[in-house]
Image (cartoon, rainbow, N blue to C red; front, side, top):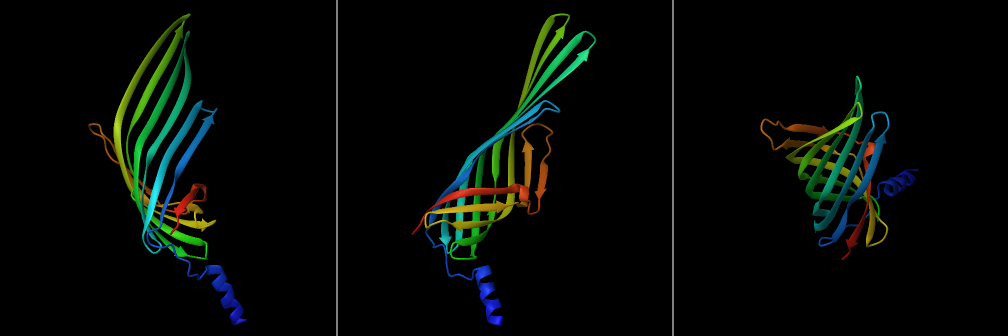
Length: 220
């Protein structure tokens, strides 16, 4: 019985000698687009990002890497208001775009011959701007008047995050990885007079924040 339990534990926790060798390199990245429309408040949110990533194993099961890319978030909201014989339709368009740089260190632990668990420490940085456009159309007694205003401000964001994940090698060149949530801290600030920093803390394994990716490995 003891031998059976021991054999099961070895199979479960994967006490394998499989290692990722020093000098191994890989390419990966994030590409995503999402769109959400809310008919309750006539709003629409669009998000797009592309962040290619390269990594290099500086030691057995220890990699360093860099992600560099671009992200864009856009929210459009429309409101209609009536004042006497006047109807005013206002459209607000908020666009936030940024150049992204994310250096990281990733440590792997072997679970089985092709399955690894990893912890990733990254320092994501964003250098971007936020633009807000307001377009109003007023109709009074058949007369239409249109006004438009626009503001724009640059911002900088930096954070420190730890992400746990799993990596499964389909073969020596391709693997599928998944991260579950993140633990970390982020601070951002707009480059305008009187602006104060905004701090954000994230702690927890959030199943709604699971991400999947495909990685190509230049196996040695």
